[in-house]
Image (tube, rainbow over all chains, first blue to last red; front, side, top):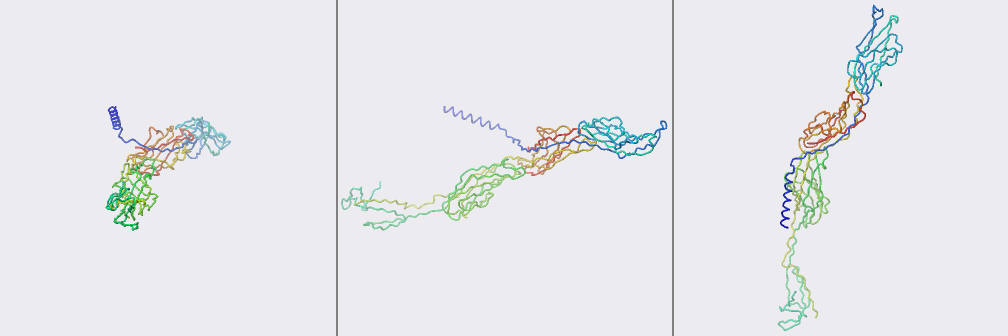
Length: 170
Length: 187
Length: 165
């Protein structure tokens, strides 16, 4: 029994020694961490702007065939907008309740951004009129074509419009 | 068994004694032996003195010093738990061991030094709450003996030992093995 | 006659007391071990990053930044330690979060886009950090969004900074 025990003990020692020899010798990757909580938010944003200064539309010629003054047209003004909202539209209106002369406006959309231009709008009163529909989550631009018209019966005169462009729901 | 020898030189067994003058009753004898500590024989005059002798005893008490530490091995370990982010210095302490001493000499002190000539890290020591003597300021251990306790002459006492280990992160990792020697020295 | 015997003790007449104790020194073994140390901490959470404005005609809204928080590190491992950053979840397309960690002990990677860096794809923000400590270094966050991404109700992300080799 004594001899057997001695042998057993020896075997165990050998096993332990071998196990120790095969332990990985490389330096373990160590690390430490620290955390921060970052709060993010994006508010609704609707921005609209014009590129181009005040316009003067001069009706100063007659159409010989029709005998009526030729309309004055200007498309130099650019409308810019940015909206991150959904289902928006751009409306346009004048401050003159009953204009003497005819003023029309139409968006010629060719740039980027969502939205569909409505047909040419006549600013016949001071209520808002849809100019571009389906504006959502985008930045866009378009040219604005202004057309001023007058008939001979309306005679000579001048009207100054303050045109307002609005991004609204819808 | 102690044998009582009469001054005549014969043996007395407590019953009778046979001497040069014949048989005598030794129970009649009174023999007194005195302790002769300093070689002075006290003259007590107990009856008849038959003779005396002296012996000189010299007692010498030399310098006695005893120094003992409660723990033979102290292990200090600096790990992440000892570190503060943003600080290069890391520190740990141990005050589990005590020092005990006894000395019958005056003007004594206890000094301390390490065997490690070029330690990588800093090891400091200070005596805590000595029952006798004055604790010196905290020392940074080196091979040069430095005062740990002063004014411990003719006393026995104890004190705690506070080890402070300091490592800089910029020094990296490693191990310093010190053998600290405490010495009772003349102040 | 009364017999009395008094026996006294003779104390070593021939012996002088010799010095028996001479232990004037004592020794103690003190072993100091310094293990590998990695430590990183941050000073708290940044303020909420809220996008509120932009320019008409531009999809990219005006970004917002925060540099109110700092981080500190201590490490004694080596001279090639780095800091990585990741989010607990990626951001939706159209939103961007960047981080910039200043450093005096290593090399900052500058502004790093961590919008899509999750735990399995953490990005290095500081590299080659030397042994030692770096305290109170600025963390800069910048959040930007596209109008085309829409609005974002208040949402959080956990940014994990890891000091590692």
